[in-house]
Image 1 (cartoon, one colour):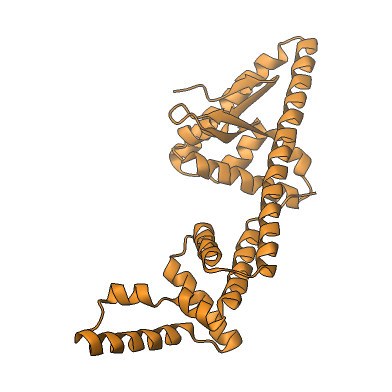
Image 2: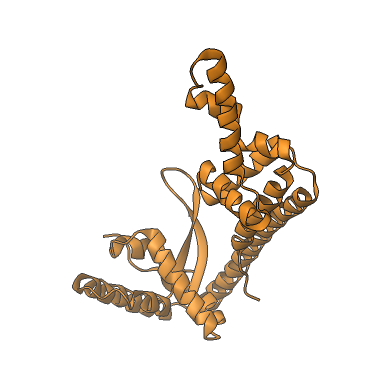
Length: 267
């Protein structure tokens, strides 16, 4: 079995990867458990305790070489996270962890006071650097989202064309993972409620007229795919001057999705 507890910056710690492996849990679930505890600590006014006992760092995955977050945990932090792991096997492993913490704590106490203090200072410095990197990353994410809102504001005041509206639909689909037909129908429903404009009915009427001409000339209607290519919702809205209303509604929906994605930072 891998080393359960190790010395890092003058303290006995374990980490979320070790907890994940030993308790047979996905690492993302252990991260979730840790962050739930950090939120509870913050709500209880114990945010500083959380920062002192949970150290956020990163590791490189050996297969895809991508960088991911992980946490180091002191003995107290480990006990807080693992308290919900209550199966018989989990209880045995918690005892092994706590025994290892005790053993390494005894080793640390045998070191000279000068060395222990130096390692503690190094740990604090490392934590400060890591927090500065995390703050910089969050600032970058926030700036990116703000830039997206500026683009949305420009879209609200600009006169749309068909190509830009299609791009807007594609962007909304990427943010929400919703199919394109569902997006159009969602906006059409809002247009009907707010403006009394029934785009699907208008499209249906125009397709029937086009088919009647085709039947009179050729004796048979268009294939459905051909008919859809000849008469579609975008073209109908352009001809009737409704495209701007569609664009404004969809831009507003996209703005709401991006607002929901804004990170919430604690002061």
